[in-house]
Image (spheres, helix red, strand yellow):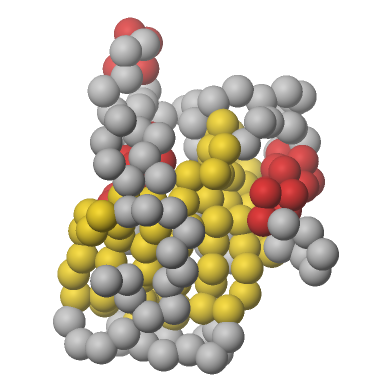
Length: 190
């Protein structure tokens, strides 16, 4: 059974869940996209998720699909184009906001164009179980500098397994958002 607010966008089986208490409630959602070029993780310099490793993305504008928004954001933020493939959908709610973040994730392995440096600083990371020999000289994916839930769903994205999930974040005593309840589903392994 899916958590409240999570839409059945793909057929998934439970993959990971945790936390205690009830799901937080929200009255509305805002739609966003997040796209990853698998060989080129980036660190955001400004805006939402500042100083966290994240993909290229942003708001879905009125009148466009999430796929169109992902392509547009990739072009605006990085100056590149890619044949993005849908990877999954996540719903996040953070204490202190009046809406949930509905984020559709996309990925590509290749791109065209030259990466610009306005929003993201290109960095290379080793992909777990990579078959490319030189990847062993690269640092590991810095999960400690990503949102807490990324360690759960990012390996699914790398494995090209579609996923669906929800994460609720509460503020701790220092005012930091911490993952307190989550549910993730994934399609069967290929």
